[in-house]
Image (cartoon, rainbow, N blue to C red; front, top):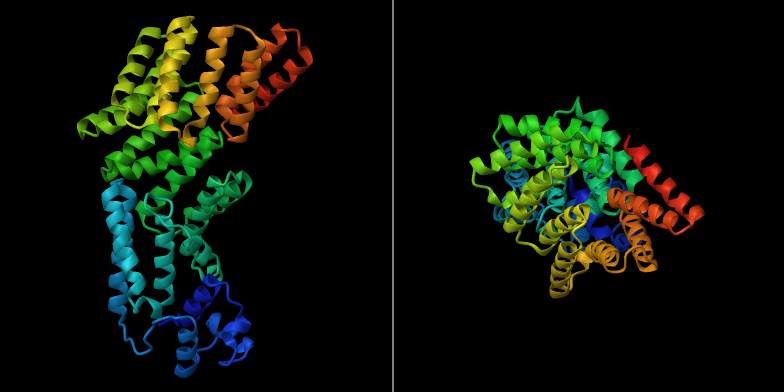
Length: 426
C-alpha cells in the first residue's frame, strides 16, 4: 500500500503557511522532512508522532486497512460524486457532499495515497457546485507531481473552470486543450467523460467557439440520452441551440429547443420552461415572426421565479417591442424592469441597468447625447465582462448613432470593434 503520511504533513503545513524549518525544528533536519513530505522515506513512528502533534493532526499510527476496504471506499466516493453531477438535485448534492466530507475523518484514507488524492479531487469538483467550500484545488496544487493520468485530467478541467471563473481565457483554453488531447485514451468512466465534455462545450460557448461547443456538448448528450439523465439532456439541447443561434442556423436552434421542451414536459420539469420558452421566442424574433416571438417571451416570463431570470425575459420583450417601434410598450417594460432592480438592490443585476438605460434614453430622448453616452457605458461594461454578444450589439448601434451625429472617426472605431468580434465568431 502506498505511503501517504508525507502528503498529510505537506498539505497541513502549507495550509498553515508554516515553513519546513519551523515544522522540523526539534524533530528532524529540514532535508529529512523534505524527503518525508515527498514520500521518499518512511520515518519512524516517533518522528511521525512528533510531526502530527506539532500540526495538531489526530492521525493514529496503528490503523490497519485492507485492499477490499480501500476499493469499497473508492467506489462509494465515485458513486456519490456521480449522483451529484448527473442528478442536478440540490438537496441530493448537499447531502452527498456531507457524506464525502465525513471521509476526511476516516483514518483509513490517510494511509492510502491514491484514495486520498481522489477524495481531494472529488471535493474540489464539489467546489464548483452549490454548497462547495473552495480551497481543495489549492491543496491539490501541492500534490500534482503524484497524479496519475486520470487525476491530471480531473485536475486540469477543474483548473480550467477556475480560470474561466476568473476571466483568464488563455489559461482556460490551454488547459482545455490538454484535457482534450488525453480524453480519448483515458480510463475514466463514461459518465465522467460526458461531464468533462459538457464542461468543455460550455466554456467554448462562452468563448464564442460555437463549433467546438456543439461538438463537445453533443458527445455529452449521447451519454445522457443513453442513460436517461433528463435534466442533463435538457441542458445539452439548450447549449447546442444557443450555439446554433449564434451561428445563425435558426432551424437547428429551434429543433434543439423543442427537444428540450419535450423532455421537460415528459418529466414535469417545468422549472426549465421559462428559459426554454424565452430562447424559443428569440429564434422566432430572429426569423421575423413577431407574434410568436411575443407569445413565447410572455409564456417564458410566466414561469420565471428569480429576479435575474425575470429581467432576461423583460429585456427580450423590450428588444422585441423596440423592433416594432412600439415606444410606449418599451418604456412600460423598462419601468417594470427597473422596479425589480430597485427592489432587489443586487450587484448581480448590474448588467440590466446598462440595458435599460440604453432603451430608456432611446425612447425618451431619441438620437441624443444621452443615448450615445449610455451606449458607450454599455459597450465598456459588456466588454469588461467578456460578453461579446452585447458588446457587439451596442458597439454597432453606437457606431451608427455616432455616424448620424457626424462623428465619423469615432464611429469607425466602434465599427471596427464590432467587425473584430464578428470575424472571431466566423
